[in-house]
Length: 272
Picture 1 (tube, rainbow, N blue to C red):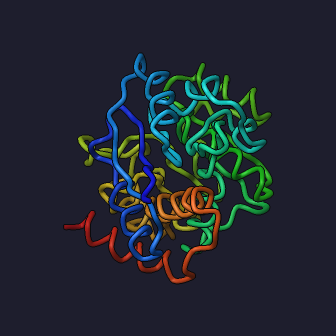
Picture 2 (cartoon, rainbow, N blue to C red):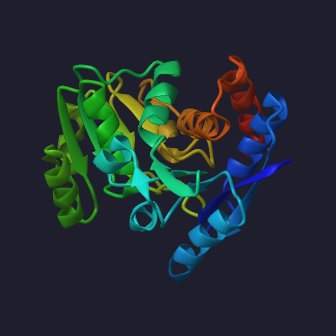
């Protein structure tokens, strides 16, 4: 019998998760169906309870529910606790289990695109749920220094206090870092021509990573490459966090060649 999986968000129509997981399910011959569900904040408790009652195997959780969902679950992993956000739920034995696969998904996607945070001075742009996972990833990877910059300085300070990292108040200090990561939504539709940094602040010796994957070639990455810098796009994190979630639901290993196959499929879909 097929069991249901899905993603909850507001909005959720733009999500590539149904396509990604549909391909994983088909190529791995798994007994699941995956769908997107538009769930407003006030509907979240009923949505979680309904999924459990209907026998769902699990859910992905996206903006803006990654933190709000935590008190609705029976258990959350140490990683999700440390990040303060849940992006994957498993229903088993009448209970709900919350995980966060964004952190390790980001690191895996960065690694396959030539990025390395160990011993590096890392600047993270943004202070939302995605930024929390990236800060955690930088700490796990052994970054030498971690700074957060956000348009609202108070939010940057709040997140920095949680993780014990620094705050960069002035963008003119950006070139002092080895790695700069865009964890904001700037560059995503409809703001596709915008970059969180002006072109003048990009340097050839800095590695730039963008969590945005639609469009794949963001203004942020275009500015970086124009400056002669190495880059990593957002597809890597999308793919690897998704595969980690599917492994939790399926409770088995997945075919080894999936990341490369999924990248080709998703790149064609995004570019098309």
